[in-house]
Amino acid sequence: MPRFQLAVPDYVSRCATNQPLRFIVDASKGDAVAIGGGPKRTGRFTTDVYLRTNAAVPVRVTGNGRESTHHVRCLPQDFPQWTVHRHRRPQAQWYVLTPAGQHSDGYVAIFDTRGVPVWWMHSSWYAPWDGKLLPDGNLMWSRIFGTDFGVDPRGGVEEHALDGRLLRVLQTHGTPTDFHDAERMPNGNYLLDSYVRRADVNLTRFGGPKHATVYDAEIQELTPEGKRVWSWNSKKHIGLSENTWWKQDRRPPDERRYDAVHINSMEPDGDGIIVSARFLDAVFRIDMKTKRITWKLGGTRRPESLTVKNDPLGSRPFGGQHDARLYGDHTLTVYDNGAAPAQHEVRPPRAVRYRIDTTQRTATLLESVSDRAVPRSGWGGGARKLAGGDWVVYWGGTTRMTERTPSNRGVLEIKFRGDRFGYRAFPIPRGRLTAQQLRTAMDAVVRTNREDISSSTAGGR
Image (cartoon, rainbow, N blue to C red; front, side):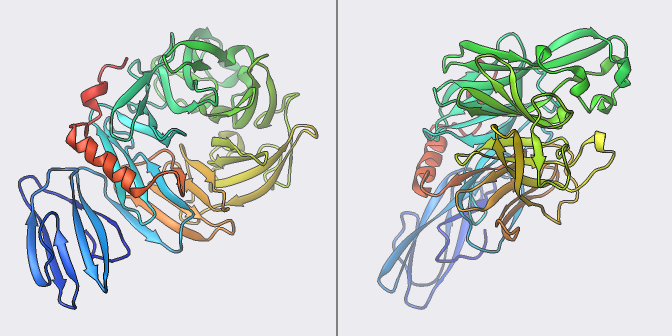
């Protein structure tokens, strides 16, 4: 735990089993300090507090006629280590992160703007992935089991209340559930994606085998009860020639799984859905009624393609991009990994914003930010634009999340150590959640023994 600062309300400390959390207090300048339920004391003193993992103790400080309460919570020993650098006041209030990497376990956590985790839950049988806050205050995330796309039948999407209660597990029908994205729609239903196996596909013209196993992308709309009410499959709408990544599967021939599209984000857009497809190097929009593609940004040319303006990378600006998001001003943000094999080079990633004009059929680049500390980004990642103008970017394939100004100046950096990679960062604007809500919810998680997600979700629905 760092040295105490009066302006900091929340702290964490890694607590060892059967060992107390020791407070060394110097209140010799007229202040008074109370640890837990103990009395207010002045001067120098030491107090030991025994806490179970994930529990917290309040610290009340009185000075100059004012009293402030601070909270110290016991962090699990296996919670990933991280570093924080804060350069100026962030515009977000919280960040949902899932430091898990290629492990079969991990955490979903909510960090404050000083880089302190105030809320978290653990899973010991899968890695939480793509955590996000829903409009009603619940949290949702996917399960990942170390595969590069969703072919594990245990896959699913979980929704939890802040107090840890499992509200629902959603899984696609007839296919394994992918982990790259899940979104709640304005009508209360959910968008999930999956992969449908297609056997004996001739890929020789793309450098592949004559009898390949190909996986087509499928999007399903499910009700809160899990009933499928709509679906879309890429097989009838996207040609195999639009995939620019066919030669990327380096497994032995009898183990190869050829991913035709590789969806990694879905964004509701009125009567349509905006989709990011990594292996097309493109973002496109589906009309939900006709199921046709109405526009396409990047990738190979087709009649629906938009004309790209002001982007130095021209008509094919993306390289394995992720996280296409639409905003109320009709602009679109994308995390561009810069990792397209079709471009025969790997370039630094960037977060970009375009104005989409469906009448003029154009996509005009408005801004772009990058990070000199991230020269390459092979997979994953996300970029979100805040109302105040800042960017929150998780630099895919790295351990680094940053908030940056529109002029690309650093605001906040949270970096995990070791191999605990994340996928995206979900920023929570100010006013959506209070610190007390998170503390109360975390206390309920501890009180009801819901610290490990596995206890209530093993086996799926």
